[in-house]
Image (cartoon, rainbow, N blue to C red; front, side, top):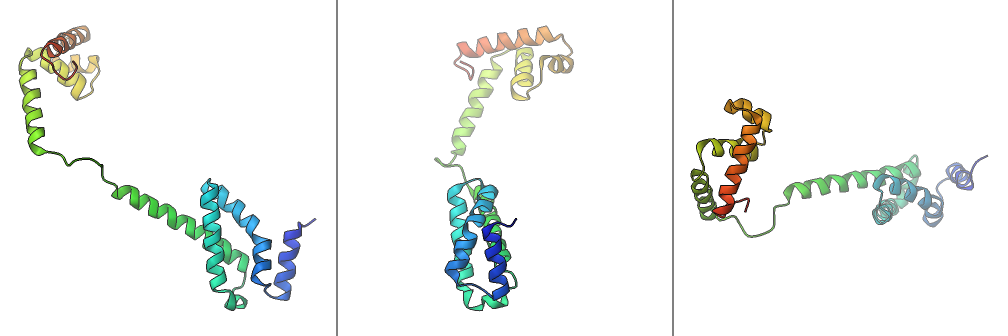
Length: 172
């Protein structure tokens, strides 16, 4: 058995295009449901539906040249959804971090401070911290690189962090 809306659509297609108000009454619920499932957002679905109906209304005087007004309406709405998604992706790519611009002199000062603190460590403590904390190696990989046992790498890193804490370093 056909739903009432399906019967109305077939009657309208056989008799020629209905008036816009009747077409809207027949189609708005189905279009809204489709757009809601596509966007996942009621407000976006309602806006896209309104935009699609507006575009169709603007062409309503030539509706007899559109083979399937319902298909046209759905195509316009889904194209609008895709255009919005593309625009959102473009806008997200253009976003820049808000806040004050980076001060290159501050970066130089920070590098000098870090270098000074690291030079206060023994070469093996420095190597252990750099491999573990800066490069993200595990103690096994760092031990293999340094040619020592993993427990020694962990001990060196712990000692190095203790020295940095007493000097007010980054892990303080």
